[in-house]
Image 1 (cartoon, rainbow, N blue to C red):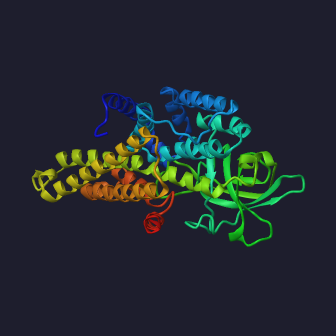
Image 2 (image 1 turned 45 degrees about the vertical axis):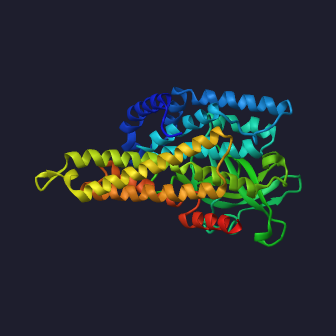
Image 3 (image 1 turned 135 degrees about the vertical axis):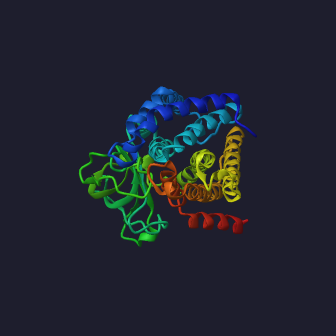
Length: 406
């Protein structure tokens, strides 16, 4: 794939019109007010039939599983699979031109949270929790990070599950930096089974929790540097009693670590599309500003140093777009990125988005530092791409370990 098809361009323009009509006018309230993004996201899904497509796909998969056919592990291939991948990526790119936080809020709910249940849950669990998440009827949160763990998500994990006498479990612990945490209806909660052994030797378990379980409390949205339209919060569990039906897979033998790594891979593979949206908008704004901003009697676009900045932004945009085209081609071939490949894509995309956003602010000068000019927001939003789903340093380590293993 070397370019977007005519159909892709039509879809891009349709999404862009929606974003400019529904999100752009509300950007200040989403960024600096107390408006959660979910009403607009639900309208987006309904407008483009995304919720109905998700419902139909879910019903087909459940029907296959009930008939004993292959589950979600198999991947489709061919032109339809490639087109499906493109249709998923185009909205991400277009949303990130104005509001990257909305992509994070949406992706964690219909992506990470629902995907964890769909990939490792029982049929009963999928029917109970997954469909409302996939259609955004309910909001989901994927809770792994803890205050003291940071990048050492599993090694530093202190949240625990203890077996209860009636065959259930008692959960304790806290989670932080949880996307959708303050508003989530359904929470995929990852913790360790406490059998009196050393914490690092404990088995990792995953539970599906509802927001109104006794002993579960949540913080207000946290104040943060960027992604203001993506609510982030803390979760606190104190003696939360759950039955075995909430244990993902309803067995302690489900490989939760492997499942979490698959989720990390999925999350990292989504960063290039987010970065492309940010970079494309920074470039477009910068080109327009270079044409119209006059200094020393000339448009600043006539100065060679400004031209160098614009040229580097365009090279970055082309490279990110080619990464997206590769992802679409891989989907057409029925393949997905390995964890190391996803880490490499995230590392490059995150650094590139940050570099371009900083250059855009510099090109705008004092105006670039002001909230009235969008490059200020895009620069703040770009930074988190180097942190969440694993910091740049973790990506480097993952790539290097993969190379050394051969």
